[in-house]
Image (cartoon, rainbow, N blue to C red; front, side, top):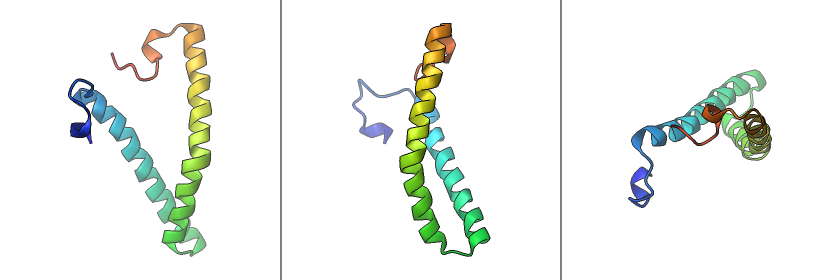
Length: 89
């Protein structure tokens, strides 16, 4: 995906890795949650994966949005320059 970005807007490798590793960790967490829940409930893992994905894509994104807005407000209020989202130095 990095090579599909325009060359003048392309992120450095370090920032690209930080962005994509967050996505990979999230997918890994959903996978293991799905495996764990399928053992507990004896349900079809595929149907549980769909439920987990839908919950993550709706409620999870809402919680992340609210959390980022709250933390961003606190960072701005306290003027903590090194904790601003999206700025890696």
